[in-house]
Image 1 (cartoon, rainbow, N blue to C red):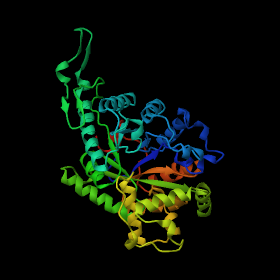
Image 2: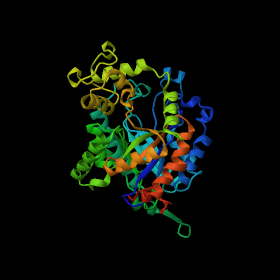
Image 3: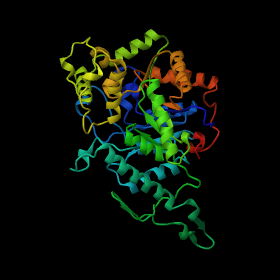
Image 4: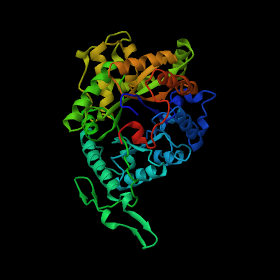
Length: 434
């Protein structure tokens, strides 16, 4: 795929079931813990020639939130994608594996296995996973900088393990009785700050294998990490200016690491509430978010801004001078910074602030409108060099997914912005990074 072409992925988190979307009659929410639901979505995404499907993950469950929706209750992403490998043949399969709590040997083995099962279509979304520490012992949670130092070493170990048992070592010579050339298989002998791993891995790499690496998070430590190792970044960029700044910064950092400036693609989450008309799309959005927990949003925004928002009048502007210190040890420094940046840029009223996605701790790019509206915004972002593609997060109802795959992607194809067909056999080749 030409590097100038869009890179498009689809979240398998069933985002169209979030908030009140699961209550839609056609949601199929009863099936979200079985493979058939996702197999149908993956086959449709492959028919549209998307680059990949992507399964985010969490290592905990928010029990109070389950009262009102499925949230991050989900199947293990790597196991799910291994099942989908048999239902698809060309599309990339990006799993999520955390570096904070998993052993690197296990992650290396799982993803190398997925790559072999899928004939070269595995990808790894690297996350530090600060949430969920209570499920893995009693040690206190790391700071963001500490977590990324550990992630850097973790990734180094995984990549070394992937190289430790090359496919070329497997001879399977029945005549001589020699199964492998063991001189090609080597221990990695890693002894570092966080891990001691001897190796080698017990799963041979696929011949010529190249597993694309994704990273989610745009804090300063996260950007440094991405610049060193990632092929793509899944980022929250609510507006063009934010996307342009992130993309330019990552290009500078990649070059400073000795990589091509374009080595790291910026793929913002694109939350799509699509309808046949703008009025229908707006109704879908409003119905989906009716009754959202406003107290939770108010509490999150107050902590992020260092300001007691409950004391403000609904129409009172929030100015930069009112901001307190950012919280130490925030769950997501990236989202905190996006919210604070919104205040500096726009000085919104309290009502306006709470209506924005940044106040919910998400801050993804949102389009509420028609396929034409979504198409125009995508072209505008690409033209402003604010993104290299996007990861689609259809919202509200299955109609958003339908319009994405059946109308929006074909529009991008007709405009020469996206592929008509797959031109290579592996995920890395289709992304142009093999």
